[in-house]
Image 1 (cartoon, rainbow, N blue to C red):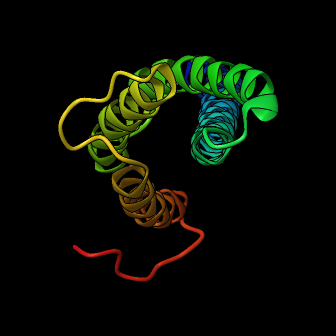
Image 2 (image 1 turned 180 degrees about the vertical axis):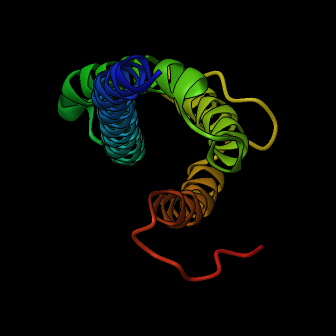
Length: 178
């Protein structure tokens, strides 16, 4: 039994060494795979954050352009030569805002989307007032002064939305009215 026992111990030793190397390699492979998955998840998060940031920037810029175009159209109402250009700028700003807002509807979180939706509806209402004034068919309550007041309210609303966007991005940790 001496030779057989020695042979058995040797075989067990060789098999143990081989199994140990195999198990070590499998553990290292699993560890590398987990690390690759973590790196991919981090890259995906960064990409999502960049896309959200770009959406926020586009929404803010489009809203500012739309408000500026509404103001320009209002000022042009009293000055006939400026009206055609002001109308074109307003139409372009409105169309651009609608495109950007459509993307925002599927991309931005609810704390931004809710106020942005109310903002969009109010922009549409002010747009209607300006167009009716421009066309000479105002409704009761439509006046240049009413438009100016509503535009001022919209600028304030946009500042609040922008503060929430900054909060969502982690740029500003200040309380935005929670």
